[in-house]
Structure formats: structure tokens, C-alpha cells
Image (cartoon, rainbow, N blue to C red; front, top):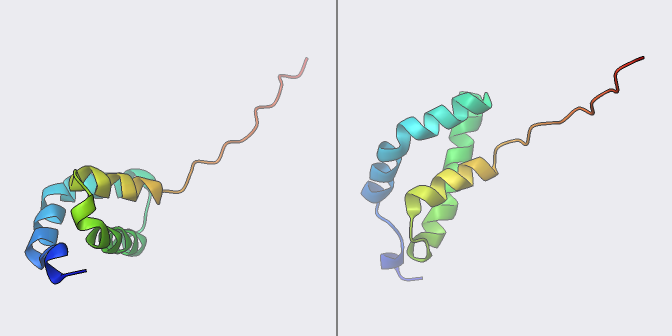
Length: 83
């Protein structure tokens, strides 16, 4: 891919700055450690960089990518009431 197909550092920084509060709130709600949050954000951003020109709504894509990485809540089977 030509270099012009990739975002600039400034474009990535601007995107993260714009979404910072929403990203932080998502990680807090999921109980994610700061180390894990940084790793997940970095992985999502790397993926976004490679898809940059194919993604229309980059903000939405990034937030959804972070949600895809979220651990799924475990469900415990309900016990029938004892009679």
C-alpha cells in the first residue's frame, strides 16, 4: 500500500483525543486494568491503521473494535426454587 493510504500520527492522536472519555468509560465499565486497556487500544489502533481507507466511520469502528475485545459476561444457570 502506498504511504498515503495510512493515517498520519496526528490523525490517530486526534481520533484518540476526541474519543478519550468514551474509551476510558468503556474500560472502566468493563473493569479493565490500565495495562490491558493500553494493550487493547494499541491493538485496535494498529488494525484501524491497516484498514484506514476502507473504514467510513472511524470513530464508530474503533469503539466497536474495543467492544469486540471485551470479555463476554458469564452467565450462571438459574436454579429452580426448592419446594
